[in-house]
Length: 389
Ligand SMILES: *Cc1c(COP(=O)(O)O)cnc(C)c1O
Image (cartoon, rainbow, N blue to C red; front, top):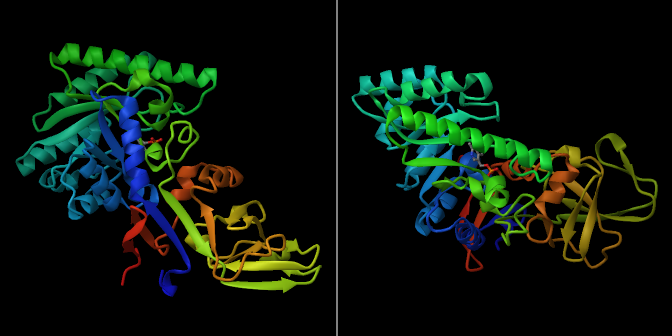
């Protein structure tokens, strides 16, 4: 590896992605279609690379959160169906249709706006109806007393002249949690989703080609929720509490290097705020990895990073561009050695727990100045720096 690369970088193992995809497909079965969620730059892994790999593997659908993300995929040569899960302003409907993208429709106001704009543009917008069965975010509210109005609203949207309802979906709030109450809540959401589908299809006199609801938690824990298509994100990347149990492999390994090692006497204050004071003669490594790279400052003095000699405790406040690790008990570790922040040897789940967050946030926080190195068959096939040059 060239010296310029020896700072901080993310290795994206496309073989691991392939393994995870195939493992999940084997789990969900041949008859179930597969939508790969690649929003937020494929959870920090690189949307075009991940999307292209999934397209080659025969994945059926991709999902993103915005038109910009969908456009990035199209410009990157991805031709497969793409669903926008989030909000798109009505003015952009023409662009969505031009690019052959599918839009989620979450309420009457959106359905009306989208249909009117699609009519104006002289086309038909392909949509998936989103049902709120208990996530309480976006979607037609159908719980309890809202059932009839929810169903009527969905039917009205499906009958609008310029909308083509290809799918209907819902999203789970606690499908990744294994306690009894969460399992019951997910079952309740699923049952309501089935009732909504039955009522809507009964009134419309036709069936949606695609019914889907299973996010990663449901793929792992609720096989009765697969329906026509599953919709996992985090499991594809080999992260989250169920990934290891399913035999999935982390796709991203975030690495940095030791740029400098200094030895301090006991009683030396380390970094901003003088929050850590050495208790003994301390051999301290400086890493070119700080919060601007995605090393959350809340992790200061609360984590350890993996060296070839073992885990090294992080010491002192994490700075914008640098941080320190204690190498006193790791005498074999030298300047230039690689340090794994998270990946196969150091689980991102553990680092996320130390930060009081979830692995999703850590992989999404790897900033754009961290180059992505795409690996296939153990070799780097592409290096991508996201900075504008
Ligand atoms: C993000 C998202 C997913 C994927 O969630 P994971 O927990 O990563 O599997 C699925 N569906 C919707 C609507 C989402 O927003």
